[in-house]
Length: 281
Image (cartoon, rainbow, N blue to C red; front, side):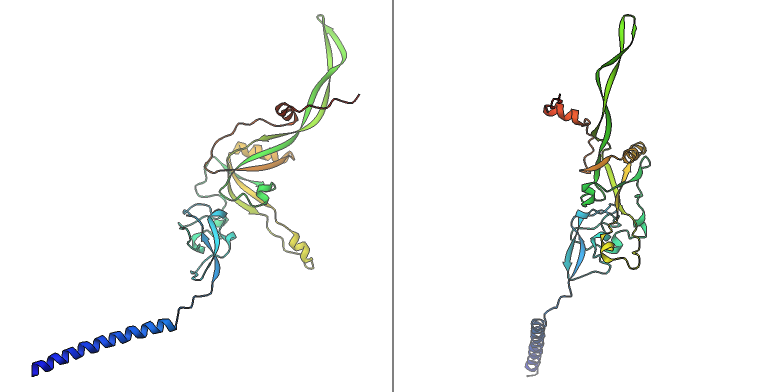
């Protein structure tokens, strides 16, 4: 009898434990159904659109703005605070970019030249006046070629004006030359890396200045280019001759140096068979 009593006692204890476990599971289940998780407030943050390697200069197409509900501490919410700055850590796609992941303004981010900048190059600024630069198509890390148009003086030999003298039976004559201005376009410097894009400092608005005038003030921008010293002198000359400078984009992986001919009106006439009109009598 005592043995049967112990068996019933053990069975009762096991059943009680099972009942308690079932009750706990049921309570948790109903609690989860009645109290669903409420997501936190969503916010636009900067995320990596492609892998970003530490030490590289972040391009505008490497990042994007996305709405997230889980915002880590230090998340960057403005793309301008990332583009053109050096990545301090590897960032994987879809990862939120944090302030500690990129150099900050006033710290190392203010340094234009990277630590591994070649000793045989210097950095110069080229005003961002061409269409590609003005419209934001050129970003740090791009490679560009420089196109230049300048006015030149053409001299065309005309008919002899007069006989100067006779030497050894040959008539020495002075030729009249027709001088005229023409433009010539050339592809000058090639495969220049854009290190950074800088803007002129903003001047504080004067007291009483209309808001329309303040909004109309657009800061000038310039491309900071890595360039050979001799090419830098050439670029300086091109800028000072009041010509027209444009830049052309190329792939950063394309190191080809193109061979081109200068183009002026004579080149167009010969290439396309343009017939010049006869002068009026």
